[in-house]
Length: 195
Figure (cartoon, rainbow, N blue to C red):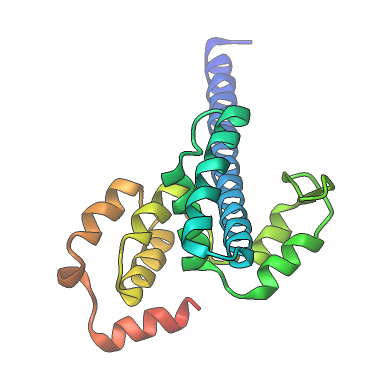
């Protein structure tokens, strides 16, 4: 094999590996987002069964944080659990999401455990059916959840997806919302096209 052939082979293999790494990173991040959404749902549903919601919620998150951190390491502080709860409350699309989520038991994209220690799995296709709007990274959602105006939030979700914005790009554009916002008619058209 001559030098030119070796170089081309090296470039092709390098491109393949770089593409695979990107796809793995996206799959991991998507699994994280779906997992955090489901954790948020479980917390909300458990809190709704509590008698004194405010006190119960504080105690629940504190105990849950300690137990999850002990078992899984960092990433489960009370603040993070509150963010997961807020994420679910901000992005849930109704009862069908949690009902559908509980019923799926196929393929191997990600594993979750139910309260009865039954395992079920969710495939990429199934997750797209259940969570069609959760296609950004967790970091994007943390930024977006801080936006109070729902139209503004929706605008930046659409633009982030359409333009493949990094978190940094989202932060830059979000700080200029009123200056980059299209006309009212164009804005309504963007929202309608992406629902």
